[in-house]
Image (cartoon, rainbow, N blue to C red; front, top):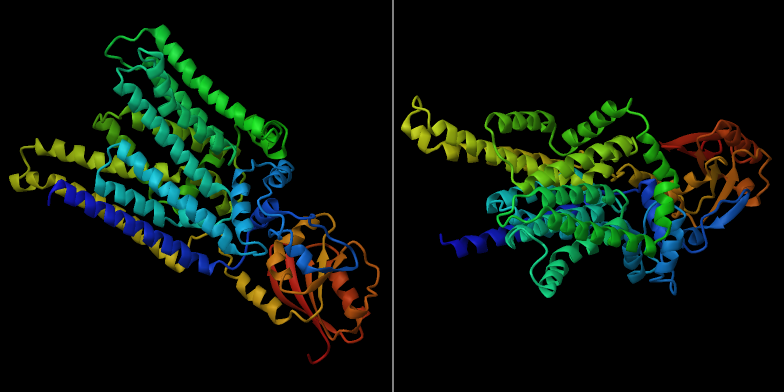
Length: 560
């Protein structure tokens, strides 16, 4: 097979792989039945109308509640409102602008598919950017497909396509940041190791082609999630160090190298200052917001650092590499040392940046169980790339070493490289098989909440029954954690659990069946009893379902 024919077939296989991965996203998305509380906030932050609020002893039309999660006609593409609402929280606005755009195209629609499709776009963008990055790194065509297959089918990647938050878009910008810095390094190396060319015009064209895209990416990445800044700073430091201490064939003076470094650093700083100028709340979020101050305070103590590092390493080990990452990484590191394998500047920059990002985020990220994967997921692709390419290189180096050994038969020596490829492909095949099994079964996939389907169906079946929301006054915002159930009723009756006055609403008092959603509170049992006692038609309360912070009761009469 000639080279052009192989390239065409390789591209065809790649496109088929991408289509299959997008189909898996759709199949897994069909299983999603509920929402994480942060997902509700994503829709609210993007589409807020009048503001969510709870009353006490009053009915509320659920259409007014739904209006807070959708774009109503006449309010589409209102990006200034998105920025204003987001300035009250702790995140930058770009992701919410993107979600708001999707919701504006389909007004009045509240659907999981809006968030999933927005993330599928980010997934596709990430896929092509990762492919372009591997081409710059001169990864072999087969290995490119293996890395894309492992990452694209991985249960953590699919999980964050399902999660209506900014993490898939952050992944795209982080891959783009890595790609642009590798390209910048190689372009600098290609023009006689200097970014300051002989003429002002040629120097400007180099800056425009290679540094200006870094500025654009960083501007957008910073406005997607502040953790992007961690990756950007470390890869920028690595590039600057390489720029200052690189070996140059034409003996570039240190003063010129320093000037080149200043040009790069100044350009990056300008991009971040422009981002803050565009969204002034960013500075307050980072230095004064509750998440920013929490993250900064985490650096004041080292006592919990080992446990935090092990926690996040364990999440990646189990969720991305089926439990083999820690052992495999240790073995590969030992092999690199023993075999004295040299690492290119490009890979060294990626490895250092990936490790630094992982460590800093492990020290500052919230400990939320498996959902804490969100903070490290944007660099999971990098660890997959490093592990697979490192394994390929180690197997190749071992085959070269063994070829020199006299005790091995000639037939075995001739096939050593083939044996190495078989080991690599077998390992990758097992990871892909494990990942696709997780995808199709739903095992290890986060944010599906399949158990919520029955609760929504129950609400739908009882939509004509009076529904009472007993909320905890200390945490009224948790009412919106059950929005998917609330929206199935035409209206709901809000009651504070701290107000134990007898209910006097005629609809509640005359019904022979009442559905109650009761928040966890020390007064919960007392309020349920009050509701039963206030209505002569009711005699008992039956627990129907329970979820975090909420219990559903069905109040009925005897024999019902």
